[in-house]
Length: 428
Image (cartoon, rainbow, N blue to C red):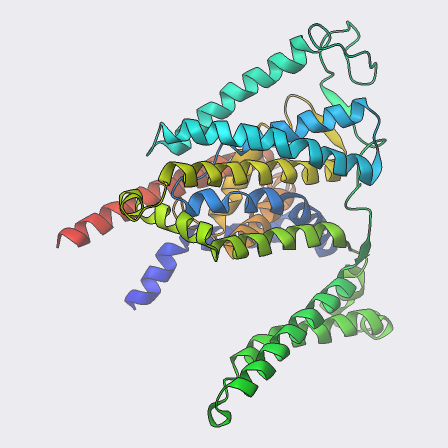
């Protein structure tokens, strides 16, 4: 019973949002095909940025509100690439090349500053984001066209000074990554499931050869079961369209329609590479240092770890990943709001991570993905649910912003509450 209470308490934010999402889906009355199509696009668009938050959390630096600085680095690169008229995948790759050194520099400076504000990293990174936004606006509102010559009517305001508020990327890097390869949803799930099944079968055979045959461990075969089920569902969806369309069960008729949803394979692979990178780096000496510093800086320092250096590396990696994540986000959106695209990046990414069950001291890849799914499901359904329930879609829009700020406040409050309980139990 105590174990169940602990599970419910630790995951209360996630459980609350699962319930809110189900209520929103119910009252929005939107077709499930539309919701899933929007959800796939949003997951692909936002997951990379959310995953960029994990390393600083594990390094004990809390939630990195400073990822907006990485987003600014990406936008500087996009404006440069748009000015030089480099389009398509080459434009995207050039944006990545330009983003890397800018975001590394910004991340290094951010890490140096946060080392001076130990224990207050979250509020310091938030204020630093506001300060950086001021410098960013000074650059593109005043310096471009005066100290920085730029004669480009597509980018520069009619007065010759300052960058336009909105830049259309449709002739530039829009869908540069997403458009390389798209496959129907169930074709994608089929390929991915077969890949995972092959991996678990390989692990099972390898262990069977090495272990005592009298005590074979079947855990890998058990893990393979969900993917086997997904393979069967995918095969039915792909090859049983006629059978499902003529079915008297309404829910089965939706399955062939779901295969009209296209998944951008290359973008998903990039996100998967980031997941592998996070898992790999946490198993290296550097990753162990991240964890040691996150658990106790004093003990880590006594153990011979250069704490300040490790913290700077964590923030630099996070800022770099956030910059690349912003490039993925903007190539999917197809429009750059010069002075606004970066402003809510940190808030929404942090809210998504917390909704997945993460805290300011612990975060996993699974929590990042689950949080992204729940957060953006609520984003999709809340305007229409608000309109159907209260007669105004604007209520749903307000609710989305309220959710973003509310979940951060709630999670920080819960973290403080847990620390108090832990302190009391340690005294006993």
